[in-house]
Length: 427
Image (tube, rainbow, N blue to C red; front, side):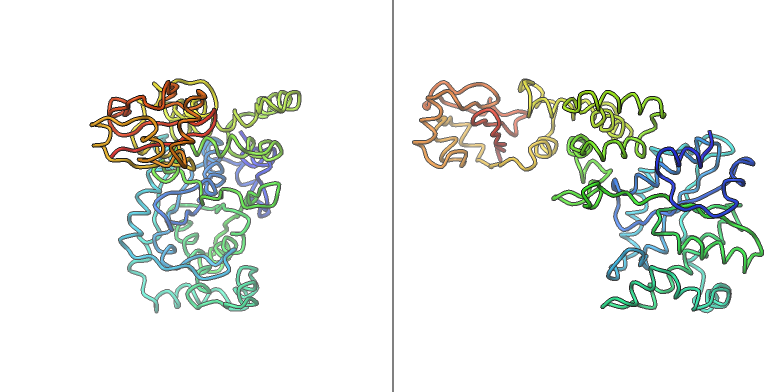
């Protein structure tokens, strides 16, 4: 497998330094990508770089995943309009542990000579004094060179300006490359296209300080066809951590991709080969309403991030909300998963004692909760046969409900009409 060709046909390649492809074709090469530890989980915006490392390793090369314990304390100005908050060491360590656990799902850390390795730049910066840094690193890169970078120019021309802390970021990242080149024989840095300036500062430092040669490769920044930012929803980032974004919501994010974006994303975010992808595209073009691409994309990514069992649960959740799956499925969910499933659906809390004593359907849905605005409205719709609890139609407004309707002893589902769900939690 040719790594650069793989990125090309997938539409991932953006910039590549002359000589890089020739180097990679000679044999196993060590390369790295840096990950920003501003949270204890990566999000789908990080997946393009994770996929780059997967392809790199599959092509026989050795990937290093650098988690920025030191650079996370500074903050990369690339693509940012304002300086980010600096992180405390405790929060940073928590974030690093979370990211490491996620990367271990994707990369092979036990494959012999090209095993992936995790490194943390805090390890080589923690004892590096400021005076040593400006003597050993600062003297090799001119201010003119640093000022010419787009990430610096844009901030200097903006209203907020740029702090000295941020200005030095490219030197800090450049030294990462130099350190890995010297101590790990790492000759290639990869990243998103907004990182080109920082990466080539590293190649310059290797040349000027170490008298060596290093290389650079960047991938396309992922954008949605409508111009909106990839990986964001109204609720915020789509995280890889199931505690932050439920597997159901994660699955739905990919399933709801537009047709044009699905054709782009299935190349970038799956490991399907070109023949498989073109066959899926042919199916999609013949019957767009079946959403073949979206389903294949959502299945592949959900399984690789969350596992087969969570994918199956996500499918059942979709079928429950939009199809004919019975209430039995909900017994497989804990309270957190039920709340995640019904995210965006109105939910109410009632006293467990109400159900222990027994309560009429009308009082349950119009007094203890606000499923209906009034008892009159509740009675009328119940009599019309349009109301259900746990998918069982309520036969009479005076029907008595007790705590045996609770799923897992915690919650039940009311349904008004076919599509209006309400999650009721007993406390």
